Image 1 (cartoon, rainbow, N blue to C red):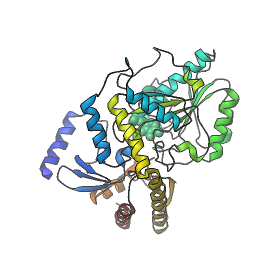
Image 2: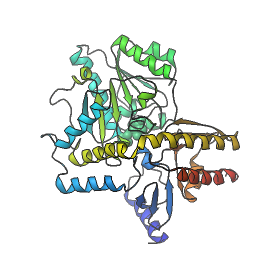
Image 3: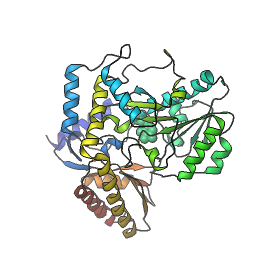
Image 4: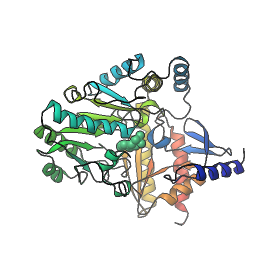
Length: 403
Ligand SMILES: *Cc1c(COP(=O)(O)O)cnc(C)c1O
């Protein structure tokens, strides 16, 4: 197919899709590992992994086979009945995390929505304190696009024009212990926080901040929710992002990488808090269907078989060293490199969208985080040579005079 086909498809997209995205002008049709191809046959090195989703890369043969086999056996039955794969996946996630129980849904926003609803109901019904309704969240955060999750998202661009939002919510400065100490009190229902802010600019908070949140939530019996939609499932070099600080939440939301690209959200809960959900209080039609669960189980199996987390840790450190060299070479335009595992940010002194476009024109896919941060979130199976190639392209782009 030709560039004309691509231009025609984009023209159709602009007529037939709602205009809520600012899309790069390529139409992707195929992938393999860390590479994707557009409809005109051009190949790109994918350092976005579909926004930290395709943790095993594109078209992993074992994952693809697991999905195909399950599709031919049973795709969906609803939660009117048990299904074997959902039970097996819940067992596995509970064994491998702090959680005692799992609720399945289909996206990160839904997992956070479930976390907020469960926290409210836990306080009101289990603890008998219906007045405990306030949610503490943080500036720069991202928790999703539903009305409740944008209300706890601390970035005005995601909230503007959608009011009135879910309330009461208090947005506190991220990483600020003394502000959080004062805010978490007798009105607090729950605190929702990313153990590393992804969309907000790949920001790693001090461990002491997360410890303080745990202490204050314990002291006030507030629910501590970790949004690990982006940091969970190996992305930071440990299975869960909370392992870096050692701070264990009461609820943890997952999505993005959990099923390797098949839509799935999960809420993991400590048993005591999980008591807030009784039969009929919450549900999802698609949540935890056999197809998505087969994909997630295959992802977890492949993680073990192929040492995916070990690769993530080693490749992440290698990438960090490369980004630090880039920061030195292009200072002060490039201010530094940060992150954990294979969630890394190169911090610039300028809006990075023009750089994202120029990298793409040279065959490298990257995304922006927080406006001035170039985000690297490649498949967790990325090889050193691929990182070298990405850094070489970025080096060429940064060597050109700024547009
Ligand atoms: C992506 C993301 C979400 C939203 O997930 P969706 O699947 O798009 O609803 C929520 N929280 C964090 C931390 C995310 O990175």
